[in-house]
Length: 332
Picture 1 (cartoon, rainbow, N blue to C red):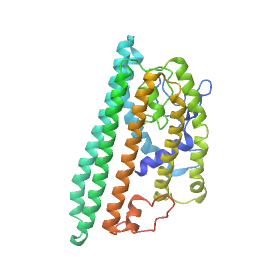
Picture 2 (tube, rainbow, N blue to C red):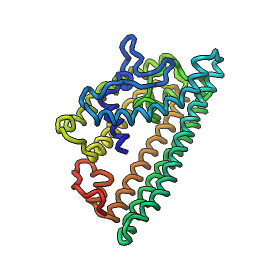
Picture 3 (cartoon, rainbow, N blue to C red):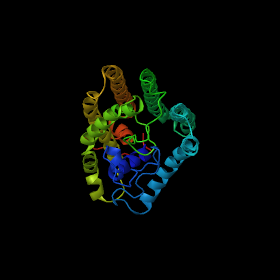
Picture 4 (cartoon, rainbow, N blue to C red):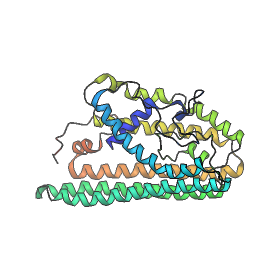
């Protein structure tokens, strides 16, 4: 989780303009490799705000994660960038690439949950007998949350796959000029704006209209995100994990708010047939977000009941607007 929040900070402070829907400067490929797939992005630090060994470790972690994703996409790039393919074949490669990403995500989630279960048993062997019930309750709450999040994600993907098929986007090659997703390089986000580019076949006029709506909607995104980190940059010293958790929640909230705003404008660009499927897709995204929120809230409630609010906050981070009291890391 801490690594993901570090990545979120870099996204907010060092994202190239194209991530927020802004047109890249002439000669700037917006952090993308030719053909639309992203690689690397801004190689500098977040506005120069972080220096030294801490930044090096963070960027090293990111490099490892992004490097693995980059290597995974090369088998598809090898087909699209080195061969002369028909449009049908290109569409097939794009479809396989999407399937690969989905299957990899599902496999990693399944492996992580299995390993969590295995290591909970190993940790329990080290925990004093009188503390075991508390740890078991906390571990159970975390596992239930992860299972609920995975189920919500799976349900959403199933609905979106049907929409994509209905719209014929599963048989259309990805547009070479499609803007990168809002998020880190290689990130998989199912936002209401993104699915218009990935699950619908848009006309040139619709694409231009969507570009304009996205630029208008995301124009102040970086300013809003940078404001979240103003206090951290001026505080000095080691970063507070709880502060990063709260910032992560705030960033998701801002992203979803802007996504909803742009989606309302973008919907007016669609045909009646497209609007029908887009309404279905947006409802599925809203439902998934609601299930994710409920899973997080249920997890927190169960952990509070097991070990108390202070220790739950130390583990999960305090709710927005509430500071977490310091708790020894090994205390239960």
